[in-house]
Image (cartoon, rainbow, N blue to C red; front, side):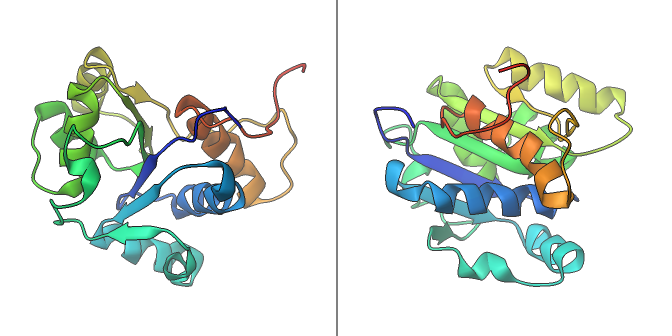
Length: 189
């Protein structure tokens, strides 16, 4: 872990790929004592997809502060907050499009706007296939504004044995991009 605790926000949107969010939450819980504040925002579709894909509502069991999607009093809705990183995992194409267009109609898009304007880390774990030209242009806009697009494309170098290990190849990469140092498989290291 780094020397300075990182305050991080995790947003979970309605894209397929709830296993990615679960693995991020598990990892944040495992390393919670070395981190600063951990905040979570889930869209309604994220809750629906979690229940559909993982057959549970275990997102209720994590010891983090969950904020409602329209709670603009959340600290990270302002540039004056001390949150240094915002991870959206998985990130739907609708959320990407609103961020790319500067639409701040809920806490997720407002917090993304704050991260970009304050030049802080914004990592979007996008999950869609195939991509339309609109998706690609939106990814370009977010990248040019300072965000990082980290597609949910798992790697196989570490020979993952199950879905969670496979998802971890993406989630660990995204957490590393957010500035959180955790043990993870590294190519030829």
